[in-house]
Amino acid sequence: MGYAELYKAAQEDPEAFWLDQARAIDWITPPDRALFDRGENLYEWYADAQVNGCYNAVDRHVEGGRADQAAIIYDSPITGQKQTITFAELQTRTARLAGALVAQGVEKGDRVIIYMPMVPEAIEAMLACARIGAVHSVVFGGFAANELAVRIDDCTPKAVIAASCGLEPNRTVAYKPLLDGAIEMATHKPDACIILQRPEHPCELGPRDVEWHAAIAQGTPADCVPVAGNHPAYILYTSGTTGAPKGVVRHTAGHLVALNWTMKNIYQVDPGEVFWAASDVGWVVGHSYIAYGPLIAGNTTVVFEGKPVGTPDAGTFWRVISEHNVRSFFTAPTAIRAVKREDPKGLEIAKYDLSGLRALYLAGERADPDTIIWAQETLGVPVYDHWWQTETGYTIAGNPAGLEALPVKIGSPTVPMPGYDVQILDEGGNRMAPGELGAIAIKLPLPPGTLPTLWNAEDRFRKSYLTTFPGYYETGDAGMIDEDGYLYIMARTDDVINVAGHRLSTGAMEEVLAGHPDVAECAVIGVSDALKGQAPVGFVCLTNGVNRPHDEITAECVKRVRDQIGPVAAFKLAVVVDRLPKTRSGKILRATMVKIADSQEFKLPATIDDPAILDEIRTALKSIGLAQS
Ligand code: COA
Ligand code: AMP
View 1 (tube, protein in one colour):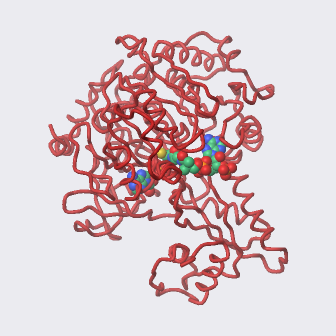
View 2: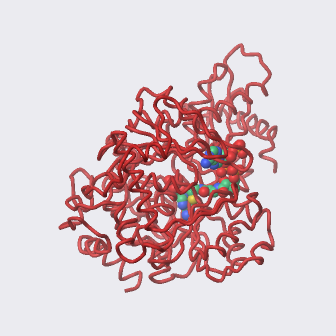
View 3: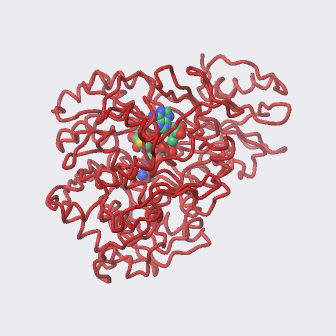
């Protein structure tokens, strides 16, 4: 079957299609039904089945003849370490860590927060939770203690698994003080923290902490426990329009079936081959394509602790691909831009044998044509853009290259994957004609593996995704579909920005700035950035009577965002202005400010209160090196 037939089959009889795909998973009790309609636009998949995620990612491969195959290749150009862990070793290590969790009182359904750098133990921690039916929530290391505290209070973990430190090229990030600070700030207190001591920066342990190996010694290896198909595998927090992150819930069975399907049909890898996603376990790409996807499908996954450049050079990606025989490689466009900037002629690429590489996959932000063309020309392999979100967990629109490679149209992530009925709607919810720009919505139900709800926040789930267009999931992206059915993603429709492939909320940054005692009002916008795609810029209006040097205040604003959200926000630019441009009804004209910063043409909003303010904004932007032309 080609793409068109398969897509049609999934549309016409989703029940049969997804039951058929489910046969690739090892069930304890196989599903009788695929889709469960829970009413009022809520859906679940394979709810009546019994399964275990860790069994499918690890144990079944040991039993099925892959015991000695590498499951994980750890490659850390930062520490100089390399390590290969076979499926048999991964089974032993995971069972032991699962036993350690049990010994700390963790039971099926309990939440466990994982706060780890890119080391194999991070994957083992996720799998150990899945093994005993605990629900993990991984928190990215680049977030500040405050963000960790918010997540602790929202998902109320019984235990935390953390490392003593993470390693950035320019500094060691001591995780333990951040963790202790977060627990101190949070109302909920976990019972225990299992701490992996890294030799680069060991930490002192407190009364709640248990050292990793000591924790393992206190337990006995744990077996895989059966969980229902709709048992949450994990919660992953992502940015919304306010400071409170959304806890995306992933059900176990749907994600097993869907991720397994993607490994061959999208990423073109067969069991036994090496797949590499250069991301971080703290993001959805890390969940789906460093941890679960490749392992479920019997692939070897690469855990890379480094950056595209500077660890040690712009050839590091190509070294890893050639050394470990990576067949499909996935990263964010920003990472390729970083490499291209340092090695525009691709001289580093020529140093390595990349003959095993089939394709480069890009996602996480818009893939700009320059980056795609540079990668196509220098790597000599197809470059596939694909579009998805934390909420969906895998590709909404992509090129099903393993099934049938469709022609690439630069600027488009290609076509909807089976199960996704993607439509372009106008403000009234009417379907728009090909080529017309509108909101991108997906007709319900979403396919297996996508979010069924938000953790403890069904109302917010409905309001965020289901209310604007009844019967549809609102993606928050705007775009169009062309005559050939190719999708184009143009912009977000909300206050979410994308900085170096990281999804961030300008609303959350505004909340932090508004907390500064001298700030009366503020706005944060995402301006174009040649490397990171977008970069946040803050505008602050000062409280009457404040008479301190402006650069002191803006420096404090930058520090506040770094301290309260984290370095990942990359918030480096803030400027003081007298007033913000608004509509007559008081809405801040952020989109117009972005256009001025990016030196783009714009139409004066008809409802603007005082157009003169735009000149003040332009002057302020010029003072920080923006709006130059
Ligand atoms: N723990 C602690 N701090 C972290 C971190 C982590 N896991 N990851 C990033 N940070 C810090 C960085 O050190 C940096 O701090 P600084 O302000 O002191 O320099 C800050 O957060 C911003 O990080 P980032 O936006 O990643 O920029 P960078 O300068 O470190 O690297 C790129 C730039 C383009 C090389 C990098 O962004 C990159 O490779 N991104 C890949 C994108 C990606 O994986 N996206 C996930 C979706 S696919
Ligand atoms: P995240 O949830 O962090 O994966 O971010 C999802 C958002 O990133 C999407 O809603 C888009 O705005 C953006 N995004 C992800 N992939 C792409 C892509 N291939 N093209 C354009 N935007 C993308």
